[in-house]
Amino acid sequence: MSSTTPKTFHKDGYLIIPNALPPTTVQALLSEAHMMLENFSLADHPMTKFSTGEKSAHVGDDYFLTSGDKIRFFFEEDAFSSTGELIKPKSRAINKIGHYLHSLSPPFASLLDPALNPDLLGAGSTGGSVEAGRKESHPAAVARALGFRDPRVLQSMVICKQPEIGGAVPPHQDSTFLYTDPPSAVGFWYALEDATIENGCLSFLAGSHRWAPVKSRFVRDQNGSGTTFFDNEGARFPSKEGYGESLKDGDEEGEYKMGEVKAGSLVLIHGNLLHKSEKNLSQKGRIIYTFHVIEGEGKVYDKRNWLQPPSEGFTKLYRG
Ligand SMILES: O=C(O)CCC(=O)C(=O)O
Image (cartoon, rainbow, N blue to C red; front, side, top):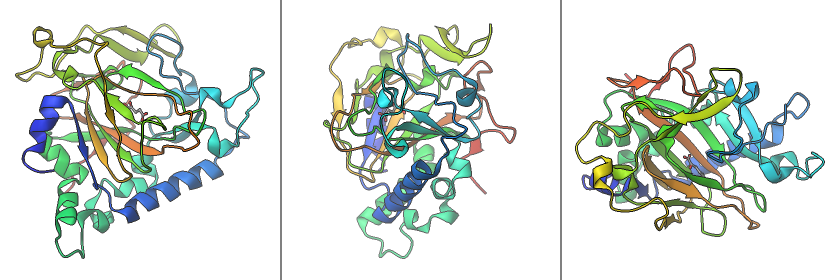
């Protein structure tokens, strides 16, 4: 991450960093994802599907709600026939794996810990520009460049976007789901395979993070089990200069910029930025790894959020 890139992130609300992961790390993470997809058990699985429709049904069963400190498997909606039979092999039927990979899976955990992933730091390299760039792309270095004081990692996921049935993700802002007052979430999204228009790459409403308020919150339902959306009564923008509805220079139906990226790229996504991805109808899957970071200092993580901290607290990104 060069000294100019935080500026681009603050202007557009997202930033693509090519070659953030060396091919060896991409391969290690991809192998771990495939191993998990092949080996999870269907026998005791509640067959929970994953849907992200903002106003429509959303996952809310116990399997989902207690997944913050576990590794769990959520199906593509279209992996089932009209009579509820699985119509794909299980490894081709999962939409996402979540939400504590960054702690429980050694390859994914090593991404956060420089000591465990010398490759990521370009150790042993001759200091070429790609390696030097990678060092700057380490999650902790990126968080520092973005101004985080005590970044905490939460909600890590492998998202598969399976061939033929990979579900669309409608326009949303990540701070709807991981709300702090004021908002502070940033998504770290790593392509483990090439993401293209055909297989459902991300797209972004550039600049919308500066004028699009976090209007809605995704929370645990206080009147029973499950989850619900409700109107945000707290701060709707980060408490920095340069944010607010008065800056509106676009609309929510505006033109989204496609984010086609190669495997190994890191995409940073501001928590207020409207972004989405389309359905994957192609024959090629699109496996990615993402986790989110919130500011642990001076921001209140809301107790009603769907995801609550594990007993040890959210994972610190700055170590030692
Ligand atoms: O990977 C995708 O298709 C969507 C991911 C996303 O929007 C997110 O993690 O906020």
